[in-house]
Image (cartoon, rainbow, N blue to C red):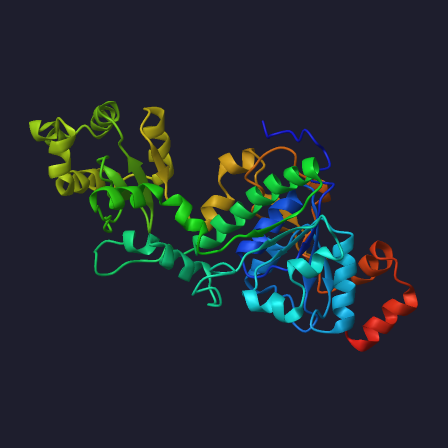
Length: 395
């Protein structure tokens, strides 16, 4: 059965977030807050269209209102400060000098809202020799040391391919906002938070830092192999670009795998213990792929899982969209960004306490909510709003 929401309108329905973020890390975090009911107001530059190419903006900006506002103009900054006065949280991920140059630093914003909670997400933090360097998830993961451990040979490190620092930073944003929002509810005091994009992946590498500092150990790229498990990797299956991942973590699973393969060559006494299997890893992998290559990946996954063997089909995006397990759990969301198309998007991995799915809405167009935000939230007159429109401060 799919998870049932225990707070039908969203656990964060009393939280108003002013979102200045862009690209991936910040928008992913604010989207998660919106999925759980926070009222997220995305502040966009009216001169920069919200592109729908590739659907990246669509997936990251659902459930957010949109106001198009020139922050570089005094009149636009005045509107923004009024918006801050009725908000709870401000989140931005510019380089540090941007907010300083706009004169909308935390100290300035406190004049409008003394209890404001603000999080800045610059690439390398607000201080330090790298602070003004631009950063993306792909470069931040490289700085963290992750890329030095990924690949097949030591002299050619690989990137993760999905800018690992971005999603980690986005999820860290959710954690830190929830923690400090709770603190503010108890103390009535806001906080300023410096969440550097490049710092986030470091928190996933602790054991490697400890090992290096203690013994000088250095983790080199090892492909799909594992230092403690064998077999461990992705093995070709029947069909074009079809693979299965198998991870044997103990002797019981190894014996079960041997029973399934039923090949006398695996009965060698050299394979009776881990050290022997590790010494013959290449031969075992060849035998295993000889067996998997004639089998359907999805069927083989079920066969091995039924025997308690960790295995999974290596899925592409289309496989995931059609996955019976995910669809049975009602993971995906369906949004209608245009009058004719209903599109299928990733849902929310954390079940319960979300907004009712029926109230989710696709990315708003640039400035689609400008009038309601300015006149209803801020109480501006229609004449003042139209004046701001005419000046190009709002669109």
